[in-house]
Image (cartoon, rainbow, N blue to C red; front, top):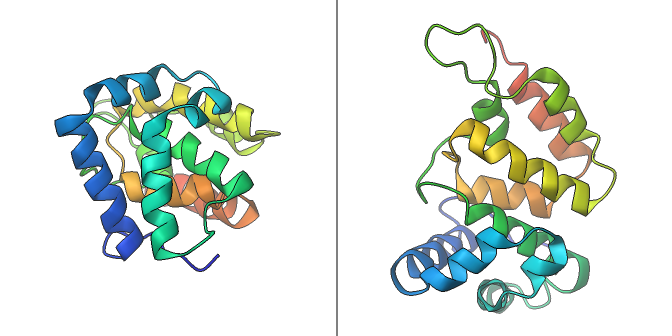
Length: 167
């Protein structure tokens, strides 16, 4: 798959337009995604297929089969974001400390468990539980890219981001 998901790429712009549409015209679809408690629940939401179709027009076949499931996970996770314009990457948001605190927003143990998620369902559940801890203020396009391409490279990037210095 060669579809690029960055804030200024055609794929990133499609995600932004989709989020704006959800906020303005499909609050019911957003609520349905927010209630999704499994990957299958997310796949069953029509809003996911609207975005998948838009992205597949940019790169035919890019989100077929298992990549489609990962996109559905990302859509359900994006429905929990408070803003569609967040700038932080997930690992940076998880390692942020509130003023006057010496603790990360997400504990190291929870972070490690997230990286050790044994399948997509475990990853989805872990990320859904983390989003409220970081106030849902992350970049939706980076979140989508990381979920869709989840693997050893993304895990390493997250570890470097979470354990950045100074923390």
